Length: 218
Image (cartoon, rainbow, N blue to C red; front, side):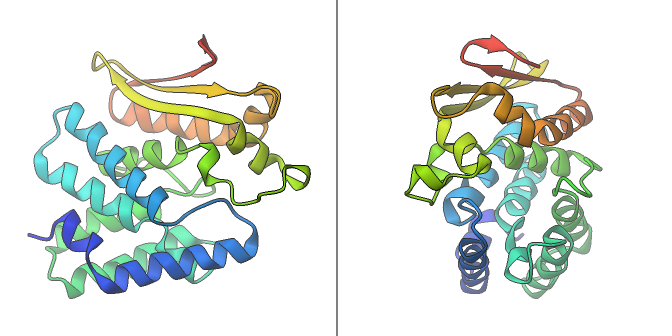
């Protein structure tokens, strides 16, 4: 069976991720390279593993997480859908079972806020892992005087942790430097993502909680 490690070590996959991130550099987006997709893959798998899902579902979540942003190599617009098509070609070439391919590409095609929906547990885990990856190391702009709101929000996050707690809820716990970004700025650009995380958590029979500087916000 095709494993996450097979995907990580695939030369074509690595090229697509690298080139996709180069496009996003040119467009002024935060980091979407190997650090991001690796973190998303690990967290998506960890969420399902913690909840007791089968080992193969955990592996598929990691594969979906690693491949989820390759569509950016074509265009940022509709990158989830183009990425799903690209992932189909890759996984079919590697000989993955069609049922498993379907699970992975469905998750990838449903991860972007504009069209996302947690249609299955793998998709739900991918959404939660992707939308909670907010951290100062994703900011590429080295001039704080020219930060846009996305730069400020990410740069303000000095600590970010996601945990499934007691099998009942999943919690995003942030430590934010409020001298860089007000908490309300976070909500201005991330409210849609947090609502989506709530829907994804519900798919996994969990509540979603957001804690900022020790205070529960959602």
